[in-house]
Image (cartoon, rainbow, N blue to C red; front, side, top):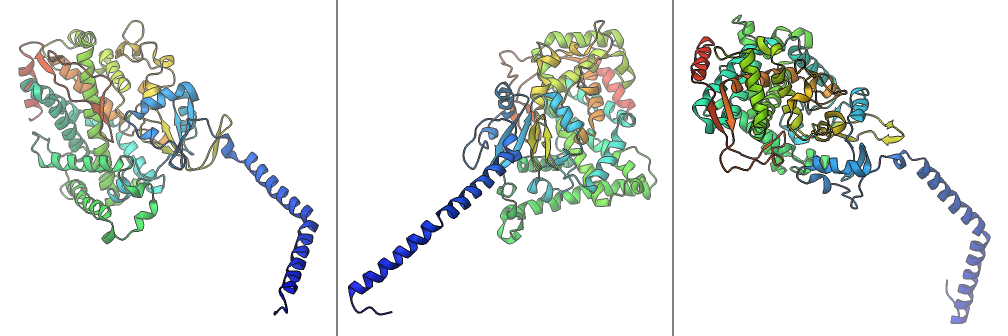
Length: 536
């Protein structure tokens, strides 16, 4: 459109502006109504949003939330400290992921035990479980049909009724641990490691015992444990925070190539171990008791493939070997720090066993203080202070608080195990007598702790399936060692009871030295004679 003069152009422009203003004024009420309506919809939705009723929790930073606060050393202690401000259950924002921490055993029982159907899943660990273990590491596996079948097989093969079939292996390794340590006190921690690895190889696969630190099987299992532990550390792999990275082709992802190569190596080892047992049972007709032998014989009961069975046994190995020696390291530290407790246990052993024979599992019912000591060792310093976190599988409400689907649920075992309302004013001390009645002859458990006497084995459908085997191993190790010798602190060594080394799967004490003194001259010879009867 052409204008004959500037004044004509200005006139047309002014006319357009006036018409536009008139239109806006005519629809002011409509515009305001739309705006008010949209705001009202937002307000109603906001007020009705269940996210407004999430549990209270400490303030975080934009985007990352509380991520920095929960990645600090000894974070379980921080969780305990927050109980004073936020109660028995509080909310954290883990870089956009909802997270609930439970400090109260009653809440943990109601949610993780009584509502186990909602809280039995695990958070995804793409490298640790999906790649390194093909998604089949039992403690980390997602809640699905394969996990249910694997867990059933593990539970039925290791429960309290059948765990005693492994007692012979456990007694034999206890004898080896005690006699080897009497010959070399400086190697106590190494001997613990050898004994726990050897025991798991025998219980799971009926393998020959590990006799020294140079055993190739020990080296491989150590390597596997280190790799798995490293991959479980928060922040170790970006893919765990950005799951889309799992689809990056192998050629462009060095971390994926490395993890897949490790898996191929570990997969071959676990298959070789399982398939040797498979051949022994099916071809050679051997009847040596082991977990894998049970899996082979009952293959039609659990409907697990050879691959799933191989990794189920591998899962139990990594769970059992690391946890047993870690628990005994903390127990050793307690013996150095509480010599009167050690003496009381030895007095019981002298009264019941005497000094003419070694303790056996047949003596368990007559050694209540030793049994109480096992419970106290697991309570006093839980080797995994927060366990393995659960994950909610659906939206839920508890005491009016909203827990959204996909929430990471952490049970702070450390706090529960040291709750003075359950364990008394001396909950921070190592005192096995808390598990005995007034006469000191019967083992009792505090309310809410079930048969375990503590919360260290976990909750619900994710409770440790090997807990009876673990407790039995600790019993015979403790009884045999305290019968034979006495632990004492090295002169000038300050004991660090509260410091630890976080190895990812477990926490262990900072390195310490220990003296070992035979309690009577015949102790070593009696151990040697008993080992010979066991064929070692």
